[in-house]
Length: 297
Image (cartoon, rainbow, N blue to C red; front, side):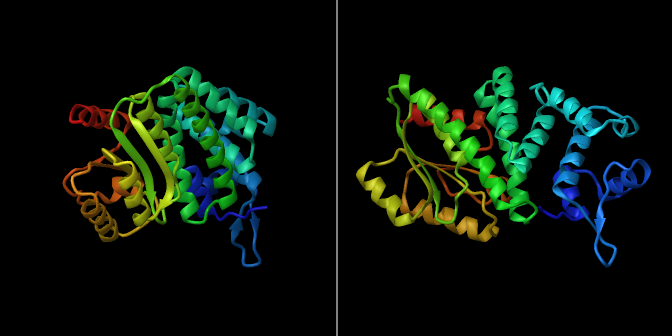
């Protein structure tokens, strides 16, 4: 059983520690254990309950009313909200619970409901990407177990691969060749996997290399099947100077080849981009870049 501090609960749920203490004292919503030195600590059950409470509170339920619900009533009310695909924030909270509980059925129900209402692309951009950014931060700070992150990431990866396989059945690639890869040390490939799906839909000739590709291997691939463009992403925490140095190295190794770059580090650090490099922040900017690429082919 995992053990969480009140700061962990704040990071995961978004509820301030001060508010959690008030809810404990006034309503008895959760009951922390204490160490021999009287420091609060919380269990998986406490965290799951707090996430459910957070969902209902976000949707306007008063804490006094939530406190009157038993555990089953609490879960039932939350499930009703989570299956409404208009509630993106609530769905992200529900995916968080499915990750903590290793509950594949709950994950599939929430995701299917969102896809039906929003479509696959919008679900990925509006629900899954924000969710992955959130768990990536929690994983890096050690707040969640890596096994839980791997569980949910692999489920999402399965869904994307199925979508890509379905897309490949009916498409003939006629556009420019775009190579998708992650540089050495980068292993979070869900972002480039999804964008490769979009590129296939747009008719581009996709070469997908996956995670942690050495520079020398990338050069060999380029010699065998020359790329018209590259797409890469940076999620793993690094210094801004380190990121800028790596981008410059790629620019010098593949002179004149456009690079599309995305990921949490590009968004937050806003590094200087060499000539021919474009920051991709959304599906819209990606599709616009593909149109330019096809036009200049």
